[in-house]
Length: 266
Length: 289
Image (cartoon, rainbow over all chains, first blue to last red):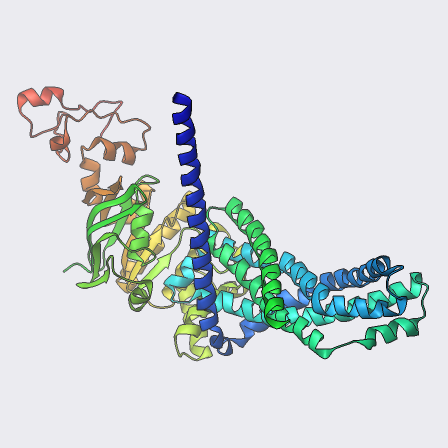
């Protein structure tokens, strides 16, 4: 009898704990949605302080270029090697360029480069805003009637929405260079065959779709960092946890939005 | 009429009551120190006064007008914020801006002043806190704790506030710098007739600068009076706090004896002969403060 009661009590405790977790999760989604709405509604204010956005474009965008270049170079090379492995004995090698071009422009470059940028930028934003919260700088802005969303988050979001597509375009270009280098150095194929394959089914729509969705990924990169930074509690430990959660959430949301956009567009 | 009135303020977080029926008046031009142990509720009270939190019950009035109540929204409070200047504990300077930009930021964004006027006001504010114009190009990370406090104070002053609030302004400073900050708080009152509320647990600073001291304990105002009055208080907890003692050494019989002055013999006066026997006595181990 005691055993049964213990089991009932344990089940009840687990149930309450699970309900609490679900409630916290739903509350987080509501708060995140509220932050997104508030940020978007203040976007027009960037024209009053364009310098804030330009500084962020340089810090978040141009600062990420070396990292993106290295990642893109290897991404292009790896795509060629994987494509050859998958195609061997099944698809004629003259279609290698087609597979590489389609993979890079529609999916691999936009998603992987956005995730790499998230790794650098989302964590930076979460750490910056989390530290500002811990040191009462956000409170100071509020009491000085300086809206933290307007002055901190909007410039970062606009900068990311502009610079992530720019980085993806640059990354795609470097990835194609990487693929060409790999074909030239290690694949038994003429360069003309590979390049004609790249052009064969090239569609500008694929390229545009790949780039347009990175505008959404740019917003995800900035807003997840800002949200988790503003929700950070405690000192250095709280900021550390916020940065970890922010980069995980950004990676998941990039994949979720990639899926949603694919469903809507394709 | 007092400039600021706090009436029956209550706040709880979950099941924990943090502020429990706080009543406090702040008069124009006075320096009021709010003292209390860590966790007593003084920071929560401070955040209510500056509109970073709103009460579950009660209200705050400024010049007789309700500025904070359970139905007040942060946006509603914005129109009163310009009347308050705040110095946060670590000064809360914006890390990404130098000293000059920190001071000029609110002026550039909230006023229509020309750049020349802004530069002039920034220079004057720095001068008020005893810093030279050369500090304008320094980054916050390059400043010592005392300098940061002074820059934070200068930033609060650029908007010409009516009431200055200080959150633990001397908590991380050495005794000499503590004295300088205390002198600054006093000089602002003398030069600008500024009303000041200082939240602190530094009792010696409170004695030095405050016209009145309010002591908060477990979310209630335990005492409010002049520094001389608090020294004379017979409340055992107040005596423990102002003497910085780990244990209560007073054995005051009950709440009715609190506030009664000691007489020349070192016993609590105003008690019947029978009560006097059980009342606390001063001794060399337990002198009057």
